[in-house]
Length: 231
View (cartoon, rainbow, N blue to C red):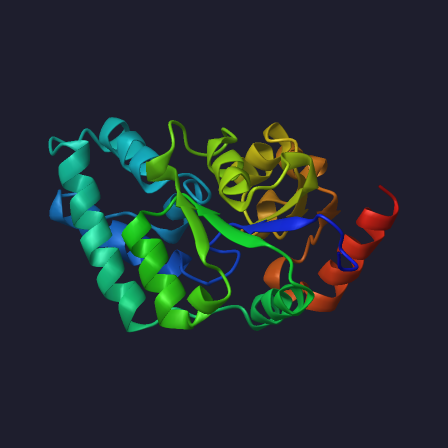
């Protein structure tokens, strides 16, 4: 057993491991424009950070009175997103360094995301993260997306880990709430800085208020070691 004991680490994908939110915004903007909604802004997009694509589109249908079905809109947005994601998706350098630190220790790792299985696979393969992160769960594969704990609990099940031994890395309040509901510790790195005071982030064991600009692999690793030692 290594220095981190029985610890397993579960990563959210979008906005946590990779800077994919601009692609999601652009795919959503194009999808909505096709439906006649031409004033969708980045501020509008920020309302949906951290929830599944299907849930986002369900809310869009109600908000904008869209006539197309959820499945039609989902297929359109996912198609547009995959084109953008395959062209270029950036891994946060300190996150890649953190994954490597954990891999060197033999820590079991998984991805648990609101994105589709196809999007997760495309990003992990395209960025080279698939070699380190072989276990991945999409919210499409469980009954409920975040803030419900389902996707994290399924990731723990696939890793053969006790939820109490799992640490989640998350950028969004619904994800932090899901980690808490799953009985897992959480390292929170808010993607939207203005959301750092959201009550869901108060449940995190480590809150990096400055987001990705302030996150370092070493700080997160040292926190993990301290959390293991203090039980």
